Length: 299
Image (cartoon, rainbow, N blue to C red; front, side):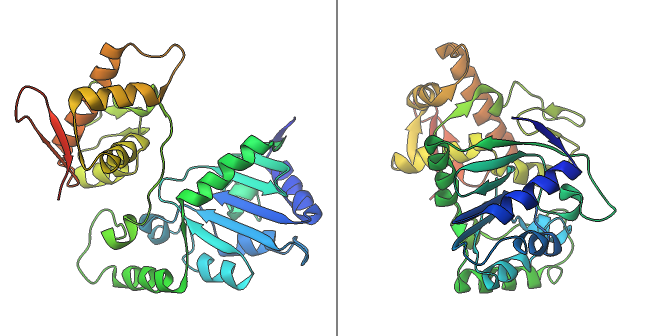
């Protein structure tokens, strides 16, 4: 295994795509049409399985990080196109045997195509059967684009600007609720620490400094693994759990070395619920009918 930097990444991706026999899978937070077509051009016609997974947040489209046209472009080129709103990975997988994993998005700057280049780093690794299962799970949890969803996405992106200006944009609930990831594990660093929610405060679990824009901060938090896990675990338990039971479920899913003490897990959960309360997350209701907090999905 060797470390690849900038131009070496593009050379390696091209070489691997040329040698692909049966399948190619590209997983990228950002994706630009010219870069995607450049990569697709290296794949021979005998490769029948081609899958693209892109983050595709509305803000990514409006800021130009990802091209909306990548969906139709990919479908026309014979790809299955998936979207996933919490994606950060950049991975290129060939024949489920080799994978290039690193920081390079499928964009000109990410892959050093043209003049504007980022300094990226990656490595080429062998893909094992257990890795294939993880890769398939990413696609299983994502949303496969069909014609009906494409029309809905187009309608919402075309409506932007007609209802006034705002700091951050997102797809409406008819789209976002289609994304139902299965969070099987959490790390302690994916949960909020004790906080004050004041200007300049850094939230390491989001890698974000709070600047007073609560709308933007809520949107970032909405797609955090901790919040997605909470929504999913409540759905699995008829929409309601009490604090003690929820803390036990959090303890069971946490991966850390060493595993946190139960009292620490309770504090982690308390921090999470406190942030939900301060942000006024619409999906969750927190009350205390007796002595223990009750956490419910809003009906």
